[in-house]
Image (cartoon, rainbow, N blue to C red; front, side, top):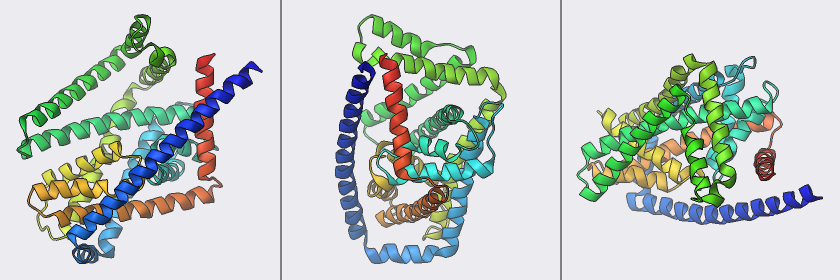
Amino acid sequence: MQKQMSIEPESNKSQTKNSRVRTIAAIFSVVGLGLFIYLIYSVGIREIFESIIGFGLTGFAVILSLYFFRIVLRAAAWNLSVYKPHSLHLKDSIPAVIIGEAVSSMIPLGVLASGTAKVLAVRKQIPFVVGFSSVATENLFYCLATGMFLVSGAVLFLIGFDIPAIWAWGIEFLIGLTVVLTIVGFLMVYRQWHWGSGLCEILYRKGILHNFLEHRRESVREFEDLILDFYQKYPGRFIPILLLECGYHLFGVAEVYFILSRIHINTPTIYLSFLLESVSRVITVIFKLIPFVVGVDEAGAQFITETLALGAGLGVTLAIIRKGRMIFWVGVGVLITLKRGLSLGEVFRHHELMGNTKRIHESQ
């Protein structure tokens, strides 16, 4: 009876939280859609349409191929993150990554359930526990590579733009903080230090953030153990996985470079392509509540191209073409999901069940 009473409040809290997220996501989506319509109207439908026609089906086929290579790289990184004696092959992990990317793109905060979708997609190849731990490990490397990519983009932004001193100081501080945290993270893994959970424990005992850390400090410890144990068993996999994740971002730069070369820029630069991709990645991270990051992605690309005196239309057209590529692969992900007998409802039920089980376990 006591367990049932403890489960019900957790379920009610989860439902209330999900309802709030849906409401906020709906508001953000409407704002994003409005921004998208405004940008198209301000640039001109005819100009955008002509650029897209000029890009052509051949160009679209190329960017579809480039994105497939990115999927292969993340799938290979995931394969290397699986503990022995279990293993995954690309024929299993590639469709799973496509499903995960589809869930992440088309649903508000779908990134939180994309890992569950990937694990469900390979449930016949590896056990759930192995699947979730390997996804968590691969996601850590992805976050590390993304952080390095964004720092590089921020450095290029400082070099190429004349911005107010206070903004420059803020960006420099964030760059320095990211570099320091990255170095500390490498040292923690290499030296097998439990600094994160140790700091959480000290703060908790001193009454600082007591309620926040009451259950979360154990989660930090579990996460540290997961990563440190992986490094201890497979130290030779760290660099290959990180290189695969970095390759994922570099193929994104290549995609931007190719698109720019086809829409009225004869000699696009690596600098501009890198900058546009890094801004797009920042927007994707911040505005995951908006499906397909509609509107905000176009606004970010427009800001960069307009600032560099290349025209607002170029940035908006670039974002729309990439959105077409995204929609295509989301469609492929939905088809694979249906073929494998999965549904989005099943993905979210498993995702919420895992979260509720963990919260109940921590409260006991």
